[in-house]
Length: 365
Image (cartoon, helix red, strand yellow):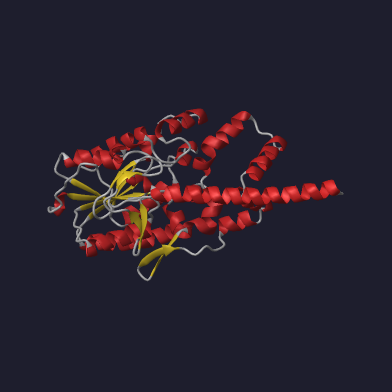
């Protein structure tokens, strides 16, 4: 009996200690990340890059921003007085160049090439942007910063509809965090007791999580190959932000709402640009998931190609440069993903950025 009490007491003490140590570690990591964080809140368009930032972020990317918090090349004293020579790039983390130094991103490469021709690339992009932010940030810079430009190249990401549906909402002219509500995805997960239990343990413990995970892996044995695949590709291929583009059931039940919200904000963006006589071009590109599933004619492409056509907007589809005429085998697709994307990440590496830059250089002069 004494041994049972001792065992139970020890077990609860272990849980308490594990939770305390885990939360302490999480707090320290959060503080350290904050020191290297180059993202700040914005009262109108949710968030932006720090102004006059000259450092590296937590991923050791070199980041340089101007007085307005716009990412730029390290040495770029630019004259913006001639608006006809000003082109705007707008998108999310891909167009900001997340994961590589800016001069190695397609935006940075093209900025340098255009600068040599007397054309300025003004990059309004930042991580986790979406159509509501595209619209409000452009409006803000035109009305409050006097920004003038002749062309905008809008890079629409496959995650944009997801962000509009679950992350942001435009309310009273301001982009806010969307209130967390039950949706198609969370309802499915809420019904999964095992998922919620794992989430609770993962978020609050370390020793217990690792112990239970080891036991789980022993009971539910997977081959070494399956484990390696899941670790390396599971997140980037099956990320819920691109679910709408390949799961027809999810798309019909809820995913298409994100498309509808995106279109509303892009219509408002176009109205602003039309008043300024700005030529708009929409550009789309694939995530690793689209390449893995061989989605040459992705829903992401078809929807925005159709919308651009109906609204007299130029459209550039980058998907073809990522696929070959002869369909690749699964192993060939994975090798190609390894070649052009960052490890276990959906963002382009240096090779991927160069591939995009070389193609766009021929298309957007």
